[in-house]
Length: 240
Image (cartoon, rainbow, N blue to C red; front, side, top):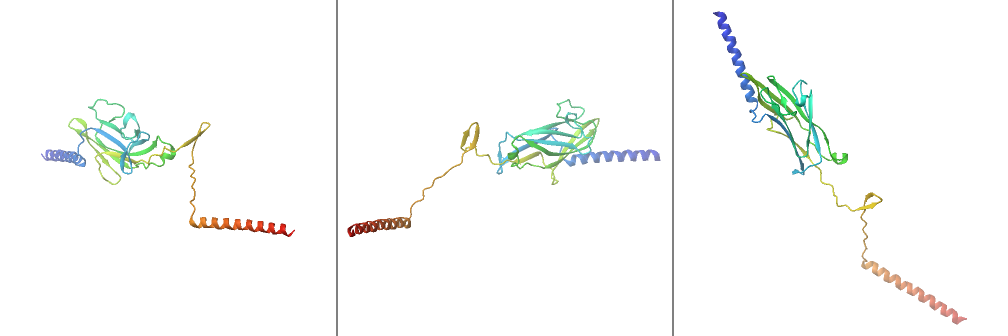
C-alpha cells in the first residue's frame, strides 16, 4: 500500500512538472500564427523611407551550441542576403509538415533552440559610397520553443530578443542611406576620358568715385607735362 502511494505521488509530481513546463512556454511569448521566421530591411534618408536598388546586405543565423537545425542542411551557421527594401523568410517545420524548400528549418525533437542573428556584410555600391552608408548592426537572439504535444512534436513559439532585452514583434534592420550624388555637373570629353569642367567666373570690378577722380587728376598732370615740354621747345627755337 505504501509503495502504491509513493508511486501515485511520483506520477502526480511528474504531471505537475509537465503542466508547469507547458504553461511556462506559453507565458514566454504568444504562440505565432504563421510558423515562419521573417527578417526584413529598409533604407531611410534623413529619417524618411527611401528607395534602394543597389545595396545588398548579408545576414548570418548562427546556432549557439553549433548543433541547432538550420536551413539547407547547413552546419553551425546559415548566411542569406537581402537586397534593397526586401525581406527573407524561413519556414519552421516539424515532423508532420511537408517539405517547403531549402530555406526551411526542420525540428524533430522537443527542446529550446537558441540562435544569434546579425548583419555580416554588404555590397553593391562602390567602396567610397558604401562607406557613406550607416548600416544597422543590431544583434538579435532568436529562440525556438519546440514542444511535445500529446503524441507529436509541434512549435510552441518563437522568441526574439534585441540587445536591450526588448522583445520586438518582428525583425527589421533600418539602414541610413547617404544623399544622392549630383549628376548635373558639366563634363569635358577628351579622347574618351571625361573630366569634370571647372567653372570660371570673370567679374568686372565697377569703378568707384575715388578711382574716377584719380584718373582725371593723372590725365590733367599728363597734359600739363606735355604742354610744358612744348613751350620749352618753342622758346629754345626762338633763342636760336
